[in-house]
Length: 155
Image 1 (tube, rainbow, N blue to C red):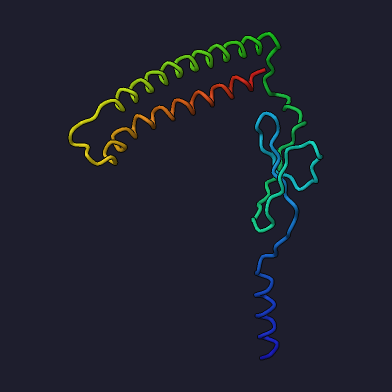
Image 2 (image 1 turned 45 degrees about the vertical axis):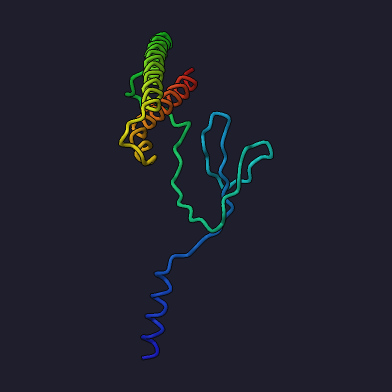
């Protein structure tokens, strides 16, 4: 009977996950890319140590120097340059369109802020009426920020 209890206790202990504590750092480079590492960062890197209380799950990294498969299609430099130029033009057009839409959204918000209806004695009603206009302005601002970041990442 005692052996059975010990066996059950041992089995229960084996099922309990073990916790490994390690120093984990969150590093952000100049382009805003975030990297998590357990290697001690250099003093010039913008890294912060994460709390030991947080759980960290690991995912194996990609092989960055892996060669392309033999059947993988290759593109010559001129074709790639033309594609990059086309991409830049498209992103510039999208940025101009998004800027125009932001200006229109700001104008609509300003017009709505100037309007006061008689049934909005409660200021919360005014805020509720203006919220969709504010959301639209914020959406266009985020889109412009994302487009500028994407243009900045081009070669």
